[in-house]
Length: 137
Image (cartoon, rainbow, N blue to C red; front, side):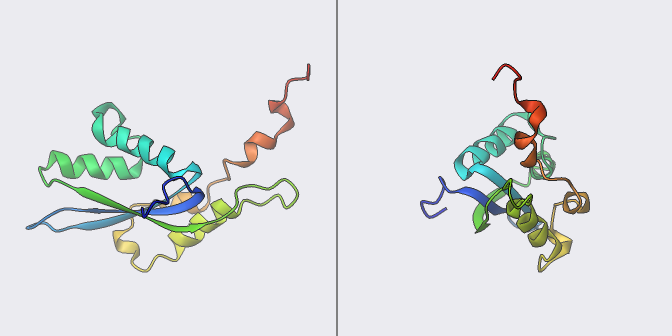
């Protein structure tokens, strides 16, 4: 990650590959509002512990390849950064950037992301809802 693992509000791309003879390449686009290092730790947990194998589309593919004895490897890169939900604009540039990257991927056949991710609601807006605040405050 070229010493950028503590970067926050990132869109990242994971490339999962298998060696010969299968030599498959699949890509996954994700986002994290926290540091990439924290998000990576969660992904790593799902690769190391079988009980989390279905927690993400990426981990499901990793375990499918691992169970077929294809020894998958994953490389990571930061695609871009963008600010998360902002109360005044009522927009989440982070979620919009992820949707853009998924929709405009150069090779959609190798993309692991589901199209439903493009129409999903922003999960970062929730922390600004009044219902989350204690009335005793």
